Image 1 (cartoon, rainbow, N blue to C red):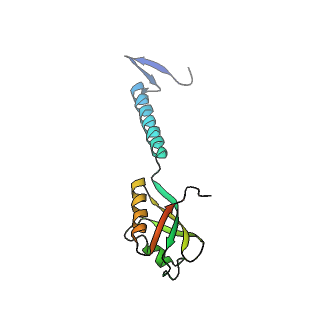
Image 2: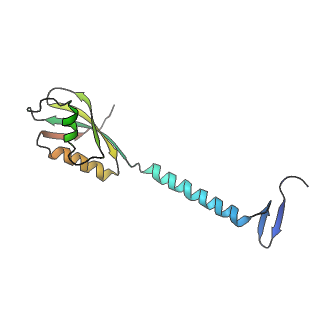
Image 3: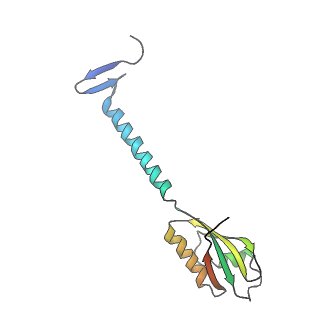
Length: 127
């Protein structure tokens, strides 16, 4: 007889010498991995938010990388990128960094507390 051989062994089935328990254990492991992947993709752990920011008139150059980095204070895992400069006092920034959501909110609150910032609004439409 050629091909796979199925042999009945006291309640388990052997396929070419591999017991059914091993097959079931492998299937359970794969199912657990699939569940973990689905859970991770359901709640992304990444922050990518656009912000409308109003600055005080004394900010010399809102596009300066040093200035943008200083708005984050000690939030070193996050980055601000200038997306648009409407005028000297109104800019659109993109905040990126790790999640979860509460850490993104903390980074936004750090920007709001900066003395050179008059207001910060999360953009609802990123297009």
